Image (cartoon, rainbow, N blue to C red; front, side, top):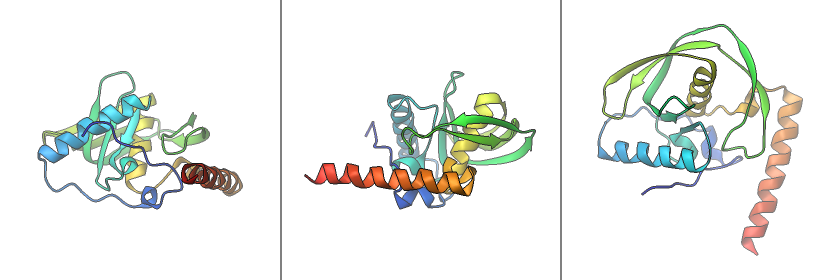
Length: 169
């Protein structure tokens, strides 16, 4: 399949909770390849399957240390707190300050079905938390104050309507 379209806000699928992956098979391996290709082509550092319309618990991340693939990821431990500006491929042009855990331990499976446990800190920990949030239907705009969220989502909805109007003409 290859490159997939990244779904943008306010598409309702972004709020859907992703299902547990029951089978590790060739379809999953192709999905992971497509996700990685899409992430790199979009100049992102992470992507959740839901962001390309597949409501399954699969994420890919690469913060410059190589591709990390996690199927059915779970945060087992989390420590400390850090605040940093984040963007999201589903929210083009939006950057917001988000508080996340500084270090985490995540477990899951790789694309071959082998158990994997990662101890992550810094940008890798942040990216993993961001993508796992997507699997639960949580976006970075949910991590800001109510007023800022309302301003951002209103502007994004307006932009989406204008963009849709351009496509229809």
